[in-house]
Length: 388
Image (cartoon, rainbow, N blue to C red; front, side, top):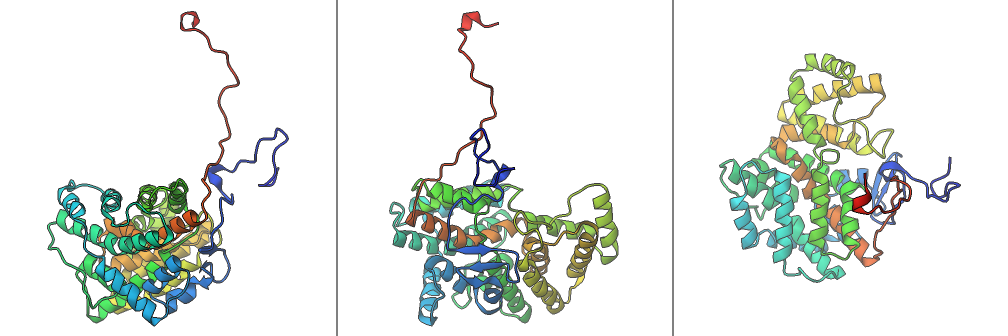
């Protein structure tokens, strides 16, 4: 067989379904491998960032290219707080969406509307894109939680000036803030946001880069990313894991449930990865935090069920959990509404998406791949009155 860079004897370029293994571009943002650290953001091991940094620091790193000093981080956090308010048309849109609208559909349209009302809507300069990125990071949690609360007849709450990003996100999602459990939950949520922030050329990021390569506006490229993430083959895995854990219900049922699922050839959610075939280092990080959070909350059932499912899947299939698997345990403990798990992912990945859009447009070349033609051979046109 030909190598990826060679051609077949017919001079047809080598083809990889789904572009698996194909190098589609260059990026200085993220290095994905299956070593001890598994993932690096701009050279920093994600394991170090998850244990020592805050999500705001990681967001700054991705967007601005370096870890901030104290004054830069303070200014960045202040910028986020000043950008919370939504423009009038976006608020009006949230007020009229159908009550059964999918949260990702609301978010997709809301981001598009933000693009029409952003003060930097037209320019695609590096600095303008940075300003738009900070606004999106601040406003996306507001769109998500305002729409959810309105649809479920819950009182509206505003972010608090005394809380950091993860603490505010937890507060907006669950009304929890301040007590010991809330502090532990916010710390684990912060870790999950760091772990989800960036992962190279996944489907939604690549969609954003393809759109950005046409020199469309940043909000348009991010809208494309949200549309890609909404697809069930990309987003929604941690929500599906949570549904599975709730279906299993008890520790005693866990092993038989998995064995039955495998016997019936049903998919067990939260295992395997398109790139990481021998385990995801991020999963090990969030697993430790989910286990500790269960002890703080006095509820270890979900972690215990997950650990049994994990063990059986390794024994029976040789498969390892991905990041979504134990994240679902943590989000169940936090009480985050399950249909908001993927929008919460967006609250994190928006930093990676925007960094990719900026990187693409700073060194742009239109992304225009070729297709392997599989249609009929050349045919002659037959006039309409001669066709049989």
